[in-house]
Image (cartoon, rainbow over all chains, first blue to last red; front, side, top):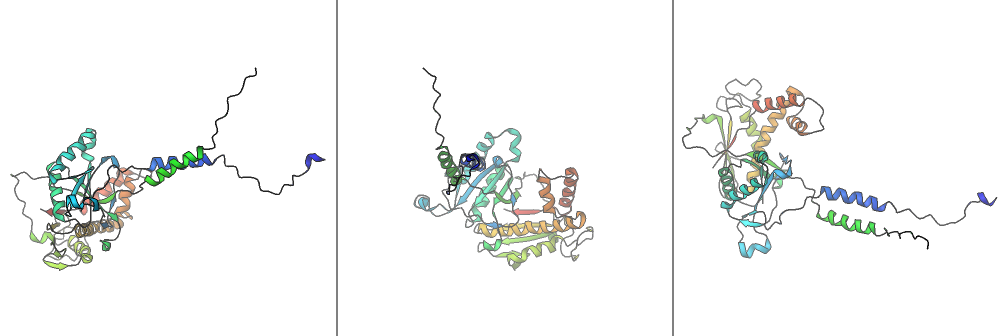
Length: 158
Length: 196
C-alpha cells in the first residue's frame, strides 16, 4: 500500500512568499495616499507654540501658509538673526504678503475664496511686532480668516 | 516546428521594487495634522464710522508688555489665573438680564455675556509664545462657559457638539444640532477684540 505511505521527511516546508508583493503593495498604496509632500523647505527656525484649545484645520487645499521666525543656521550670515517672514520658498518683506494672497486666490476657484484660511506658522520666539504687521497686511487685502498654528499641548511648555 | 510558449517573466524581484518604493514613501510621509487657534481679524474700518461708547465695566483689559508680564484690569496676574478671572468677568451678569449666568452679579463688573468684551493689547516686543498662551486661555474661558451651558441644557459639551457637527459619519439631526450650537454661541458670544 505505498499509496498511503506518509512522507517521512524531517525538514519544515518552506513558507509560501508569493503573497509578499501583494502585502507590500498594499502598504505602499496606503503610504502613497497618506503622504503629503512638503511644498516648501523651511529656511527659518519653526518651533510652534503649545496650546490646548486648538482646532484642526480641515481641507488642506484651502490653507495659505505664512511662516515666520529667525533664519536658520545656513542663512544667518546672509539674512541676520532677526525674525523674518517666509512665503513659499523664499524670504519676503511684510509688503509682499498682499501679492502672495492675491496669487493664492488666483489659483483657487472663485467660490472657494471666502473659505481660504491663512495659517500663521510662527516660531515661539518671534516678537509680536512682526505678527502685528502681518495681521495688518492681511486686513488690508481682506483675508480675515486666520489660524495661529500651534501644537496640541499644555501652555506651561511654552 | 512546435509552437513555443512565451517565456514567463520572472516576478521574483517585484517585491524588492515594491519595498524600495514603500521605504521612499515611508520616509517622506508627514502624518502631522495642521491644528491651531482659529481667529477672525476685524475688517479695516471706514473713517466715517462713529465710535461706539462702551461702559468701562463691560471691558476686560488684558495687556501684555515687552517683558511678557501681564496686566489684567490694571493688576499684575499670572497666566494660570487668567482663565478663572475671564470666566468670572464674562459670567457675572451684573444687570440681571442673563438668567443662565452663574456669576456673582457684581454691579461693578460686566452687565451680561453679550455686552462683555475682552480687550487684548500687546506690545511689539511681546513674545509670540506668551501671546498664544494668553489667547489660548481666553478662548478656553469661552469654551469652558459654553461647555457648561451645553452640558446643563443638552447634556453634552459644546466641543462634542461641534465635533459631531463636522463629523460626516455622525448619525443624528444636523439641523437641530446646528440650531443648538448657534444658540450657545449666541448666549456666550466670543467678543475678543485686539487693539492695534
